[in-house]
Length: 103
Length: 418
Image (tube, rainbow over all chains, first blue to last red; front, side, top):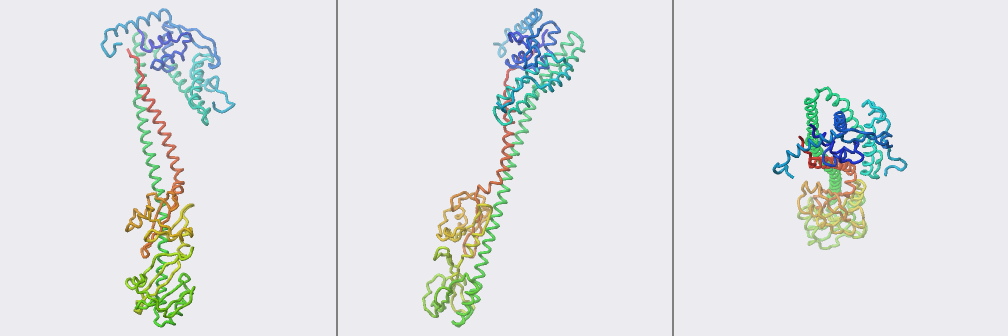
């Protein structure tokens, strides 16, 4: 089972393209009308990483970051499967729901 | 942008980074410190774009970036050092999930509370502050204005009292010196009077039959029994009726104003004494009035004609001022407190807007006006008003920003919570 924030973060990782690091994920979520503080985001990322639903590798360091590397996240196969299952439940529940929730 | 020569920061300040690393117990190369440093640079850039080239823009942008960095670091520290360890202590499995979900919901409730309660509260307090500020400025303005008009009114009252005193004293002296029946004795008495009272220029004794009996002058030859007929002269007829009479002011030569004063010789029952009295002293009194930098006084008679002004040429012209609103109000009837307070801004003889106060001279039917330009009256109020307006603008900006933030946040669609 995934919490709503876990779903948001995993979807944002998928949408971020080549640079899915913490600030980009936060921006992506904000672009879609929600906001997560960095503290919440790190907690969710750590939790997902602990459950092997996402993994990360380090990118190139930049001067803006004080020569520190970015931590670039990606979904694991297990994570992708878990997210797909979670969204399927949501889609299934939404299907046939009368207005105002229907598309 | 900003102060020339000061480059925008390319990373977060070392002091802030050391503090964040200490609180997080993080290694110097921790990626979270990297994220926070990038956040700092972004915030600085955004703040610089918004503030532009205003004075202190660089300092303000750095302050905004510092505050954002500290806030974000504190948030990360709380979650890393308090929340996550607490979640790990919870039982694994369903309990951990429940705890996590409850925590996230609690955080959402806190966020909504801030948006829906704190911001409206701020709007309410800000609104109250604005109203209080506006009222404070208005009351201060009215009080200061009332104090200033009070000063002008006192000057007008004092000048009116001096004129009354001058005329009354002159009438008394004419009356005392006229209580003589024998012509030669009367002439000697009047010569003494002309010496003692320089304002009196000529004296005429008109007998009870209206015929001129004696004429004494400091400018022309004295005459005994010249015999001129005064039976239809208003000075003679009015003085017979009312004991005393003061005629309208006249200016036979530029700079030499006069009035005719007639006093009935009641004690002897032998006619009326007519005197031509210079009112140059009244002009001097008017010219001596000082109220602030631009204050001045002038006097109009019962018809609204100018009879005294600090400018002798203007006073000599006896300009008709009956069209001025403050003169019309004064001539309209008994002077009320409202008219005397001069709260309305009228137009001066020169056309400038003025704050006007007036006082009547009842025995003569004249009105003394003391005026000051509106620009000068308001000049000391500007500092008070500017301070108030500055606070109002700041308060208004804060309220507008808070209102916009509240409106924007409330209107953002939120994802469905499961």
